[in-house]
Length: 437
Image (cartoon, rainbow, N blue to C red; front, top):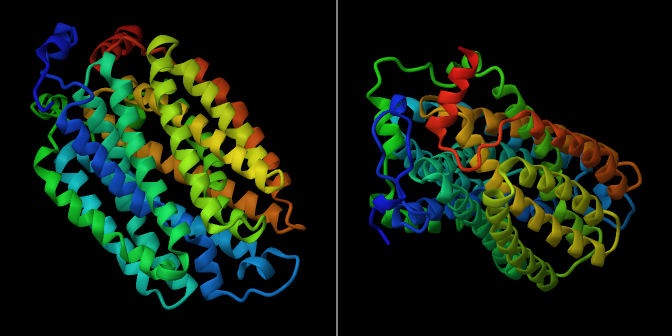
């Protein structure tokens, strides 16, 4: 671990430049990026884990039948506040795109540190909307961090290791998100939401010890020597019109499902089906185990069956299990949530590998930024629809059906993309240029 395995170098077309010294997915440099993803997940998922506590702290809980009565704030207020937080992640697009000029490593470390500091500052929020604004200010940084972590993992590895490396980074993010959810569930009355957000300073300190292991990928170093550089963010739009809109549309549709499915789950568990803190923690642990199984299955299927089929199946499964989770009752919540996490984890390696393999190094971080932006807009659309429908007689089950199932139909768009399994990004770029020439 920590050495370059030169036997794993891919066969790179001559037009793409000299062979690259690539890493195995278990290399210390990939593990360091995965730890960065843990810190990003810990910081980003706090608003979701503590949503019920935030609503009660700044709202007014009474005995009644509406969302506002039971949660403290109305479904519309919660939905709009969460939509604002999600929309703030649009700032992750230019931040990710700058990594095509300034370098992956520099932007990754800067966005992580800034994002975690701003997350910790949210602990002193004096009101709900102040909390929304402060927490939202850190979202662009952490969104860019997560996107760049995937890019670095993909660029450091060959095709045989790429889905595994992307899965490792996705697992890191999941561990961070699950960790803060477990801490919140077990220490709700001790920490409160303020103590929870202050904990963001811990991963900030821990990640300082792995800064030296985070590399600048060899692929980026080669691309940086080219005479002509596309414009960050916008440079990808005109050059990749056959693939780029499809990837953006898929990211949008997936987030229409995952945005509300993941965001409302702890509020729903705590305030509507009244799942206790210990039971919620066990549900999160169970989801963590399921997520690990999903990642292992996803990386296996992505390398054996293909990126497209695995991602499409995962997307449809996430929608179906999300609808089950909100169909009513504690059992369906736990089963639907755990299986939904499994499906989402299966989707992640295939989708991450596919997107990073479809585009050349010069615009890869910009594409990651566009994927973030499309995901943000999709999540906002999903949150607003889900929250508005839920306000009508607490119809969470209907909200899930109306929001998730139509978006799942977009999985058919995967058929319009080329299969990248077994190919290097340089090879896919050469094929694209040959086809258009």
